[in-house]
Image 1: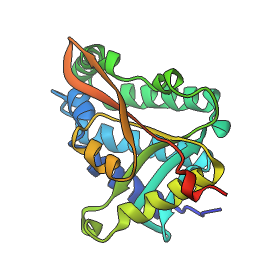
Image 2: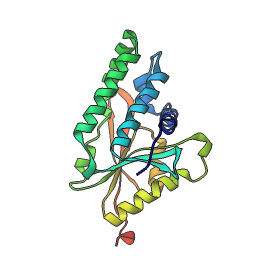
Image 3: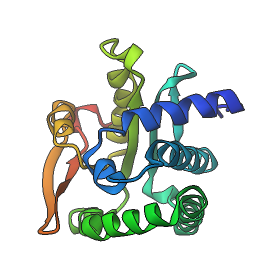
Image 4: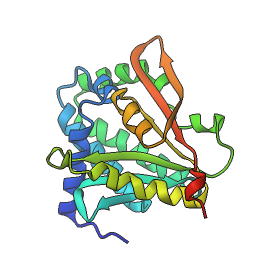
Length: 210
């Protein structure tokens, strides 16, 4: 089991926050906030802590500057996720001013219909693996870090004969994941926002199954 000291956790959270600054969903949620950077980092710390507790955080060769967060559906915990959401809300109210709180609540109302983590039930009845986050620090871009993070997960799921699901709100990610065998099976849209959720599935590769 990977050991995570405070410095590693801080680095992972920073990479996550930096990676998602330009994510369309985050941009829409944080639009107009004065404390957006502090909030994004605080939320990243909460997400990483939750991933560690779920044993779903995988570093690339122990390097906190490249990581994947993913989980088998058999290991998902509704209670754990509820606790994380509560922590996110509490931290948000501690960090933001009252004006910022009103702004983020308004922003959330606009995008809430394009945030759906149960879409896969329309396509999959049994076990699956969900990739939640893949983040690589800018200094590791072009080194093959992304491929080295994703490939072992895909190989494991092929051998286990289970599909892999993910959702992204960044259209630029769709082609990247298609390169790894994912299919865009659903796009969730809303009249209230230009943000869209792209829902993707990679079914097991029969040639790799044992």
